[in-house]
Length: 272
Length: 258
Image (cartoon, rainbow over all chains, first blue to last red; front, side, top):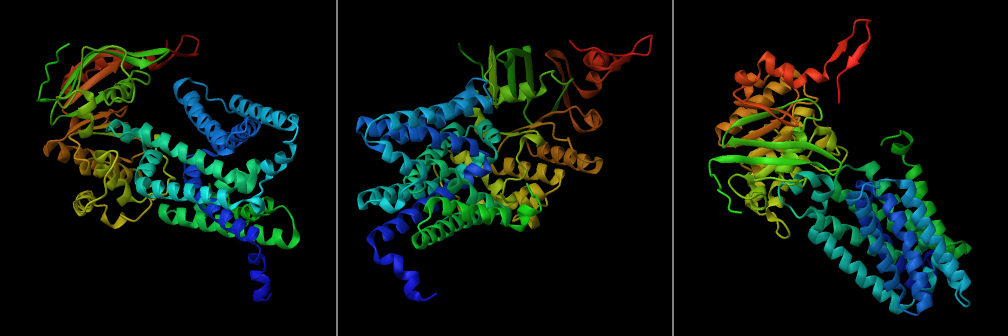
């Protein structure tokens, strides 16, 4: 493979934007995803991405910013799940799964039933990073920067409330505050990732890199870095292949992630 | 309501009723623990040992009480000097965190919303690790240690937190006899250094040697006092009788639970 071939995609503005957008999104999703994996919140990620879709659908129909709609629904879902499992005693995956797929289906009905919007459906479900505009890219970059800074500033506190919330709360540490903040970060990371990879595959971007990295290291900082690296590599790989073969880029990205997970010798040995 | 805060008490509870929304576990419990005491809570499963500890540190909201004080302060401010060690099975031992990072968390809980680790924080963590003989494990993932070592990591964190009251839920679970004795020795050393230790335990073996105060709890306070006063046959029968299986006249096994 000649150097020209490697650099070929970058002569197009839309491909450069796609690489920058995917890169930012996959790094931030993978880093945030570390906490999702450690806390066993994969289900929460799934719920958020599905209801965020309906938020986007409503925003499109109402003519407001899709990010506002998505974020509103995402944060509402995150807090709703916490409320349902903590305050009331509904700890029922089945009921929650039915509720979220129901909300998701409602979004699809709304969007496909409104004339002029059915075209957006496909790009929302499967992502459309190659169509990302400079303005959106700026937004993604700013959000990624803010999330990165917040993660770095409060990293140890997020670790504390993930590892030993009980002991921390007993000593008067503001556990609920940091758990809530972590959930909002997860919700925001999912919302900015939807543009790139779509609703259906965003959970793969969130969880698979961290799950793969956790098979390799037991050191938390290395885990976050490795997870981000996996996220970045696989999404770039996905974009490359999709440029040359015009297959779906988001599906390729998540596929390379999933193979990295499955292909890991530790997975084969069945380590928890 | 005006409280009389007694400075000599590590734990001061009066007329506490507590439990879960559909299950009142503790009824009208009063208990005082003097500072520097090694106190044990014993009783059958469901008797409220954990509920008492959790309510005392604010993990469970009390239904009713006349007085609740930690180290002579109302719970909100007293908690800063309290360390609570949950049951072993309540901790996620797969979590990728090193021994040193767990111990440093003692400073984090004091800092609250904001703050960085200072050199003094690191020094005090290394000191605590050395005190518990854990220095060579400082970069080890905490879950890969033995049960006794894990307990010591959490005790080291309590020292770094400068906690004066340490509450432990079933600390001897999963420990072999040797590790249990080592733990008891540590409790003694800590209490001689002025710490108050309160442990909920179902292990009646070393109570008389290790603790100087025992609370027998079965929903209500059955009896409390020095171990040899509390651990009489009559008291133990009263405390555990309904939880012993009995063999009936036709050889059937009957469990007395209500």
